Image 1 (cartoon, rainbow, N blue to C red):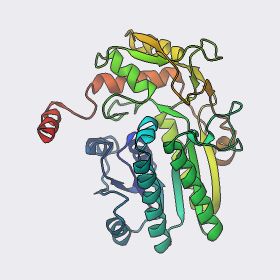
Image 2: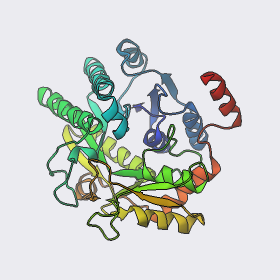
Image 3: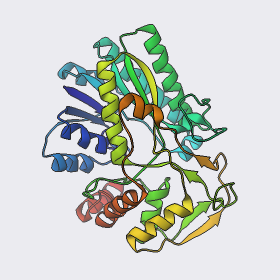
Image 4: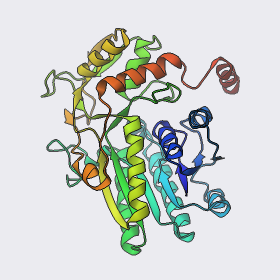
Length: 349
């Protein structure tokens, strides 16, 4: 059984590739490496001792993507490919709408042509916008607050319409909360370009000395310590959730949304404290103003995923911090080793 993984070189994609291969699936990875490194896939092969095809393609290149379907017997698709930075999406919204939505339309149209009706879609908890209550269930109102979130919500709506038009489709919409951590080996992990957008890679880069201090945006929320509370989930647990969702779409028709989170919220200061304890490093921070659109609390009700998929997050905050630090400390420059850094600098020159 062969699974096409779009965006498979990324943070969540690469960890999912490891879990797929270890579970006995064959995979094909399609990625344009705009926000990821081919080295992550080299390490996936190393970790699993298995080989697989890699296509260096953009899903906007419809003609070339169709060749992937012509050349391979694909059973199902796990669709990660897309731009993902909230702040950037506000600055260049048209680029986000065009890339994420058009790319997905291309993919779905090709799947329809080749009669491959099974897809697991990488959605996001941003589709809930400003939740009125927590924990957040899949029945909570949907209302994204930025272009990135709106692309996820629009794609969910498109996929619902696709199923309505043809009930042969089987679709899982996975709404992630806040993925952190890394593979326990320390060989693959989160590798952001430039200054990180997310909390944990920012913490680890301060701890290792790449950044001077962490900015904590807001300490006046109605939370235990005034800082924002989020549902952090270990990326390996998240990857395993994709396998459970894949089993679902292979065996059933329909379209269902699932929250992938722990159901537990941690504040920014709690995260800093937990990380300092496992790493032995201090993380200097300063308090900054709230960012527009930020909310005080956001954590999942993951009951549906446990009931219908048989999935539940297993790793706690300590393991998330240990694995994040192992990845960062062993790979201070991410996937850029010394030789790669020289090549990268030359390419930019």
